[in-house]
Length: 321
Ligand code: NAD
Image (cartoon, rainbow, N blue to C red; front, side):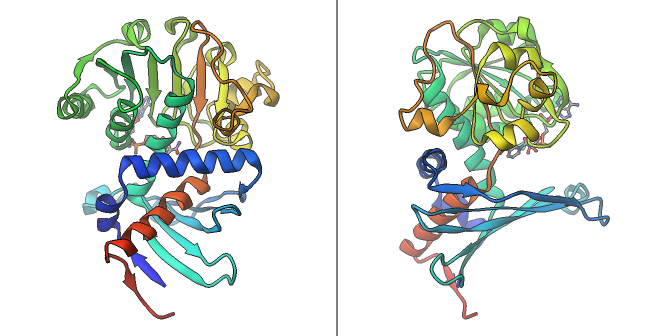
């Protein structure tokens, strides 16, 4: 079995690798070649932790495995990341363990790749201003991946905790793109593409704040009860997602579904757009919304790339099982 430690993943899996892997697996899911197994997530009654598994099988790429991990709120005080995850891959022919891969960096880069895939396939090609709602750990990864998809000239940012906005400003400066902190009305009025990446449990963006033609990538809502945009905004948009089953239960669309503003059939897997089965955006005035719930197959896809790249560069550790 091979081990690819967390600290090696950053140097061997770049944004382009993650983008290709995530776009490919979304397409495979929509073709029926890859599927996710039911998610397990439990409060374990120790250390206030949430722990679980996301797993699946990509029959086309023969990638089988799971991501195990969760959220330990006390970790920061110990100098550790609160979100902890590890990916395990298995030989699809024999069931033998194939690799254990650090999953913390890979989670961030695969989540950013998902919204970037949506921007490539759904945003207006002439998009110039990127709006960022959220300034936590994921936000910098999101911004870096997004700006590579369109000729963005400016980033506008808002965060519930204003003291965290320096992360957006510093990331934009590092990229070399203009940045302005704004209120939500200004953000909606200026942005062509908006990424939401917060842990909010109440709608932040209202339908009235969004211009026709905007593309939204809603990436923060990955649990029952979380919410980043008004259900009316989801209903006003053409909705796409990584996986419909997760979108209606734990994703941003859960609230519009519960309020009966939309039905499940109104949500399209983005893989259908990638595969040319759905046209995606059909006019410059259409509001498109990608509900990025985060699926196990994304984790397996980027972990598989990490293993391949680690082997090529002689960075994988081999152990006998
Ligand atoms: P973080 O803890 O570093 O940052 C949290 C962010 O949420 C900050 O911007 C904070 O200001 C904001 N926030 C906190 N409470 C809020 C409130 N009441 N109202 C509005 N905003 C609030 O977290 P992170 O690692 O950046 O993750 C952000 C979110 O993305 C989390 O909800 C996480 O579960 C989710 N996530 C989703 C995926 C996916 O695949 N879709 C993957 C990873 C993380």
